[in-house]
Length: 112
Length: 116
Image (cartoon, rainbow over all chains, first blue to last red; front, side):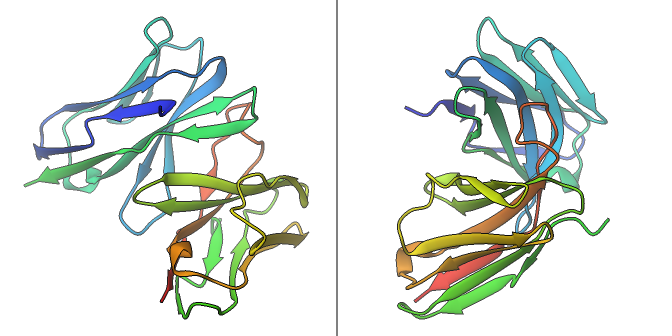
């Protein structure tokens, strides 16, 4: 079973609309949870980093939330733009193994 | 800041040939990571270095894979001999820490390897 599961696998929205991507994890404890954006043909780029004690972190139109009780994180994108079309990856830093655990990502397509 | 630089961007080779991927990390970063990305398995950590020393190579698939970091500004990932199942995008990333303190990993744009 994957330790970090993301949903939906893919999503299509119209430009200007909001959307929320989900990340459910089973691993603990962890030091921080990250969201990365990966454009096609490029490497992942860090959007937000939250410690386990933080509930929310924003970066422009991107807002990440973390609920440690339900072991869920979400990434909310406001007023989507065509340039938001990318894969979004949820990542946890595991203290026990000293490694990052990656989700499989959500592919977002923003249409005009 | 030029970011993490990887070369080549694309590599097509025949099965059995040696392949060498190169990476220049961001200056001042003390951690360097090699990842492999495929549609089926997503991002997988192959090996990481701290201050040029390999710390964890448990993700290296088999003896055909080797990585070196001769100095703080250069690393290589070598596959010899290459096989079709090695086809993937290989990413190099660098960071000021391994991840515990929350420092982001900075990824290069990857090398797309195709082994025929």
